[in-house]
Image (cartoon, rainbow, N blue to C red):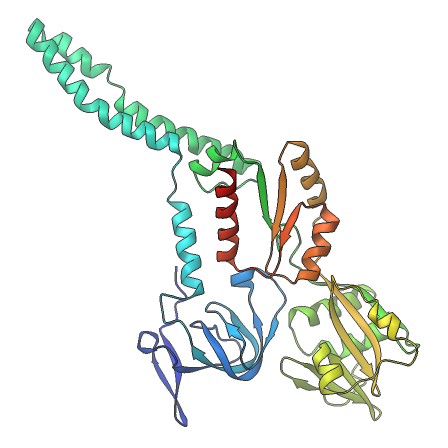
Length: 391
């Protein structure tokens, strides 16, 4: 497994030079543009961008990266451009560590398979010695051959892998993927079940949960207006807004003037001279100085933290907040309950998503524990710690 990136753009004084990735050293500066994959682990020197980390954390929503933020190889720049200072050279980064974890897990055989294989190896010389002794004592070649005929070394070495493969096939028929015989054998002693969140407990398809109007604005009209702006930019949250508008059969004609997209922040436009802004908290309240309508601060403070928030303003005041969720799968809660009923002492969720979202999902599903904002290697470390605790 590799990223299949052979060359990168290295900053050399005032020019960019395309060089082989193996020539990149620590602290070199490299440039990455929209649509490109981050080739090496690094830290942002300058630039603003929205980074898709699905290949590392599994989370479908892009995150904002700016000066000083760490970035990892294998993630993709959805929007914007960055200049990075390399902190890990090729073969030593986050992506490479994930590959090694996967490769190590796939090499595992069950303890029973290993023991049977060793037993088969030890029986081979015993069989030949018994054959020779039988011939020397009886001088009967037929009796000597009979020892070889009943030898079961090969049968031993074949039976366990076949048994494991058969069990794994039966599991796959039921929709269960098993990595190897050791996993299946260890499962019989398991006390803890660990789930990933995105795509496992949730659908990994961002959608609009609710639109909350401010300043007397109608939520449905605000959704229509948001879709009018967001339809120009096909990222995951924009798609969710446009899709919800279409589901409600809202017509979002081009009423606004030219749309100005501010990378990693939001969208600016106007209708008949009235300013429109839609985007992140940072863009709306810090960059644009948008005000919360008088008397609605408490309503704003009560917005649920478990959802992602998209803010819409009209004429310098907040007009609506669109709540974006990653829906939980219908069968997830029942599955957790059945696992508890089967005797599992602990059902845990590990996710790269935010603390607020993870907490809400864990509470809804009745999980015993959760860890948020973790990377794949952190998930592997958590499982290793659970193994040590169990022993």
